[in-house]
Structure formats: structure tokens, C-alpha cells
Image (tube, rainbow, N blue to C red):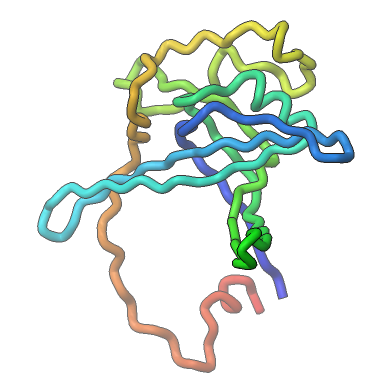
Length: 179
């Protein structure tokens, strides 16, 4: 049976990235990412909500994230979900689901159409560049840094039309996959 664990997000960092090293010397960077969505209800009311995601980058990507990202940066991340668990000193088992980042692109809003289209930032560093944190040049960010996380514009989504469920013997997913 096939399965998919893939995450793609565009959002703003909620805090500066924090880089650490594992006991074996592997770099790991963590940061928070906020995504926003807007929609219109049947009654015509506009609603919006924010989701907050924990992201983890490893190895060279961890260095790049640590060196070039900062709070409120607009980025695209692609990766997968991973849940880890640990026991607290009180003996309580805790769980945390994170996005393990496999790819990251710094974005900026395109100025031509009112700032609703996202394009790769001109100041992004190539993935192969080694830039120590002390020697890095700060990327030029044309967006003003706000106290609150900016809202990422999203298309208005209408309520989905609920169709009648297929007979129990037919699985629509199997049918779509040609099974």
C-alpha cells in the first residue's frame, strides 16, 4: 500500500532560527512558521485563522537557515512530518510533531501586482555556499518588520459541495490510483 508524508508551506518565521549541534556534531536548526488562511462563509462573513508549525532543518540546510533567516522572513518550506516523544522528569510522556525541512526558498512579495504573488528573494544564498555566521552579510529585506506576523494572502475558498458517497464496494482512492 502506498503512503505519502509531504508538507509544503509558505509562511513567516515567528522567531529567529536557533542552531545547535547534536553530540555527534551534526547541525540542527529549529524555527517556528506561521501560515494564515482566509475564507468566506455561506453567509458572506470573512474569516481568517493562523496555524503555527515547528520546523527542523539538518546539516547544511540547518546552517543556511541559521545564517539567512530571521523573524518575519517569508519562506517556502518543503519536507515531511515527524512526531517524536520523550518523558519529562515527572514521568509524563510528551509528544511533538514537527516538519523536517528538506528544501527552503526565501521569498518576497512581488511589487507589480499589489504584493500578493510570491517570488524567490533576490538575496537568497545558494545552497552550496558556506557562510559562517560571523562573516555573513544580512540579506536585504524590503518588507517592513512588523510586531505581528504578517498575514499571508490566500485565495477565497468556497464551501465544498458534498457529493453522495460511492457504494461501499468502491473505494474512490483505489479507483483514482487505477487499482
